[in-house]
Image (tube, rainbow, N blue to C red; front, side, top):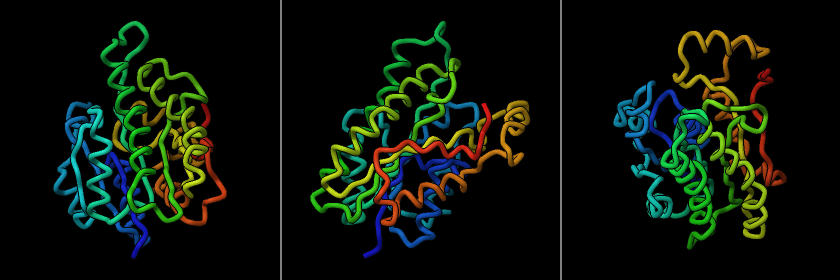
Length: 247
């Protein structure tokens, strides 16, 4: 039986989730994916053709769910385990974008960012660890952002919720360590997934020593190693995989 993985937030071919799914499929994993396309449709960068996304991945098992709903993480994991038999790797790539400064942030936006970015992530890990058929060399890969390296004052709700994921990583890792599960988080830094306008693209490019933005495929390589059986010595860590990005 091949190694199996559930990847959340796979709704755009330009996104990190898609690149991770593609990489793990290429490495022989059986993959299930989650998406919530309505979120992307509301963003400035827009959505993608979900049928085309899934076709490009070979039509893996897929579930659409709004992870703001309290029972959605358990439903997503149940769908994946039914399709795959068990899930060996959880990649919690989903995120709710939440622009807004202290002056215009609202209670509703703070709650929504927390629900999707932090609460749903913890509930996914709980459902992953509670599978009836335990994972083999279980791996959880979470995603945080660069909020611990520099201010993100124009994305306050998002930064706070991602900070919670960062701080939860070590405790989650300790909680599931005796079950043979390693938990780590990745801060990929700025990644060219189509969200930045031309001015920001040019200005940010100069801060990378390589002279180019990180690409989703670059991040997928880091995730693929963390997902592998050979990464078991690493757990409870937050990796700043930013390609030397200079703030």
